[in-house]
Image 1: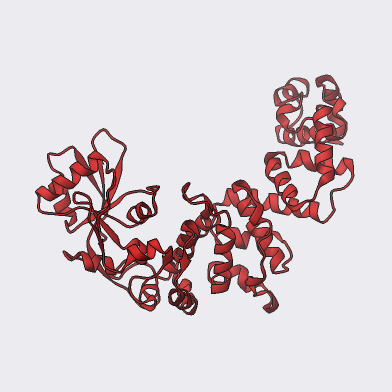
Image 2: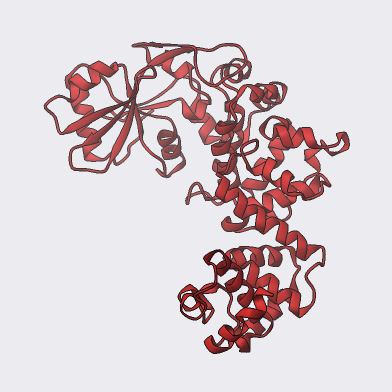
Length: 434
C-alpha cells in the first residue's frame, strides 16, 4: 500500500543519498504504525541493508554524520551537521537466541533480505516498513490490517516470539495500553503460559516498562485512554507477572496473599501523574492485605523491585508511610496536625493530594489553612533565625548542635507561631538544649 506523509526534507535527502549508493532507506516500526492511526508522535527509526561500515562510507562528504552506538546490532545514530534532529539507523539482521528469553540475542547476522529483518521483530503492528522515497509500505505479516483493527499480534507464532525475549510480554501489555489496542487471544494465552520467561530478565529492564505502563495514558496526545494504567496492571496480574517483576516482595508474602488479581487499583484510577507511583504501591498493599512496612515499600520500588533510584525511593517511602499515619487516625489533634504538616513540608503537596484522593485527613486541610492565617513557618527558610545568628549570639555552641536547635525552634513555632521573632527565638535557644 501507499502511505502519503509529509517527510522531513533532511530525511528525504538522506534517503536519496542512500539510494544513490545502492540502498533503499526505510522508516520502520512505531512511526509507520502511528501514521496509519492518524498521528506521528514517535521517534523515527530507519533501516536498510547497509552494514555499519557501508553507512559511514555513504555519509562521507555529505552534510550527515554517523555515530556508532552498537556495532554488534548495527546501530548508528545519524545527525545532520548543525541540526539537532537525529535518526537511529539499524542494519537488516537475523537473530538467534538462547532458550529462556534472556532478551539479548546470542548471535546476530547482517542480512540483505528485509523479510528476515521483519521476522525478528515482535508484533505485526511494529513490523511495517515505509520506503521513504516511494511511500510504499512493506507489510509481511498483515500488520496494516491489525493496526486498522486495533489489535496486537506477534509476527511469528507467539511461542517463538516470547521464547526469544521474555521482556516482549511486558512490551505487549505496555503497547496495548498506550495505543488502546486489544491483544490477540492466542498471543495473550501464550504470554500467560510463558510468563516464567520474565524470570530470565534482569531487574533493571523491568523499570522502563513498568513506569511506562503507569503513565500509558500520557504516551500519545492523540489517544485518549485514561483507563490504560489500571487496565494494563490488571492484565499483568492476570498473566502472573508480578512474581517475576517483584520477586523479593512476592516471596515475602503469605500464600493467601499471592492473588494479585484482587487488587482494585482504586487510588491509581484517580491519581494524577505526580501521585501515580505512590498510589500504585498503596493499592497493591491494600489489595493483597499486606501490612505497609518500610521494607515492603522498598521491595516494591527499590533495587529488588521496579528499580527507582535510592533518593526517589526514600522520598516516596516517606510519603507512603506518613499517608498511612493519617489513614490510621494517628494524626488527629491540632497540635499533631501542625507538627505533621511542618515535618512533611518537603513533599506536603503530594501527601495532601494523596489524602484528598483517599477522602481522608479533613482535619489536616483545616489546620493547614489556620497555619497559613497565623503565619506559621513551614520550613527553616521561614524561621526568623539562622546559623549565622547562632554563631553571633552563641559562639560557644558546637556546630553539630545547630541543626538540632533550629529544628527544635521550628517545631516550637508550629505550635506557637507568634514566637517566630528573632529576639524571642534567641532567648529560647537554651530551652531547646535542655
